[in-house]
Length: 272
Image (tube, rainbow, N blue to C red; front, side):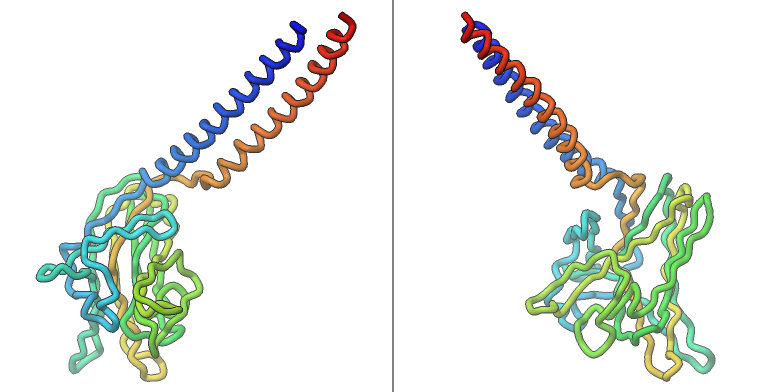
């Protein structure tokens, strides 16, 4: 009987250990999520805001300026238009004159070390599929990284209407308004700049005027920039699977050992 009591005590201890491991899994997942967010730095674009997004097509669907968005784990802060409480954006404009149309450009000076990935919120006014309407250029101590903005690929019109409504290479989307699809949106782009070192400047350019068919090319606008300085880490779900795998293996070993021990204890008890 004494042997059976010892077996019961060992089983109780095993259950307690499993509870501790379950708590550890939760802590690890929380820490991994926190570490992923810790490397995100939002770039302040408010000094060059020039347009009120809430006055655009379906603009009443957009939130107020200063609203925080989260798109697939990346945080974005929306700027406020100076004279209202609306969302402030940087809208590129084409200047038509007697000569060739001129494009507009905006540069942000920064000093952010160890940059790995940069995320933007960029959409367009108007836009025809396949038109390259601008670019974003990131300059750092490790080099220059430039990416085109192409309608139908990584940028599209902000409003679900008669212009470009699709983009195949977006990081994610925040939708606003009712309906399927929602009438208004802000799309996120992801740019891999591993090796750029310390990020020194970000330049946002508009290059489209008229496309080859004579249509007005899209005019891109910038709503937010978030810089990520954290290296790639396993997703929380990956951490969970790894830990649960170890826990499962340990539990099976415990069950086998416990089964052998309890059987021996029962035989001993019967012989007493």
